[in-house]
Image (cartoon, rainbow, N blue to C red; front, side, top):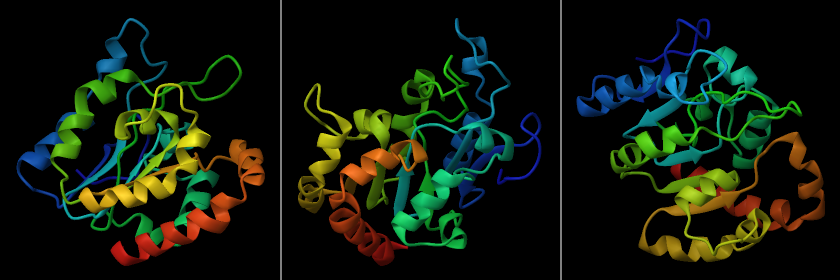
Length: 222
């Protein structure tokens, strides 16, 4: 069940590594066949097309938001300018990024949630988090570095004070590095979208202080 090619309506877009790994492969098959959002009170505006990379060997996992229009069309995660920026932040190329033996990709929503009235992406569907995420991360205990991208991933993966802004969470990145002595490093990041250019310009410490640490951690694990 490994596939990045084909049209949105007939291609499976869940990559499972290693293929044929028993219960783990079955989990990937369940997610590939998921159509909960199609039957919800507010259904998806299109056919479901889950996109994720599950791996029992990768030591790095990207926990993002949800596929956008380009990823929905390609079935391949981060095939957009956000992906280019994220790979630059990590200091890796596409061959490393798309190697499921090295890197898992588990967004908070597996399907493109549609566009809002202003043309932006809607929030990730809640069904994915409620149905799949606890099972997925229980099946991937080998993860040592979790890149927690955006507020929706932060709210699931990190224990933060109520009302804390994403900027405040990211600014506390050293605390999360220190806490990694007791388990995997969960590193909060802003979304690499161009919409965050102003945020990045106003917070030069992100590129000057956090990104060198991120690249060193990725290099050690990739």
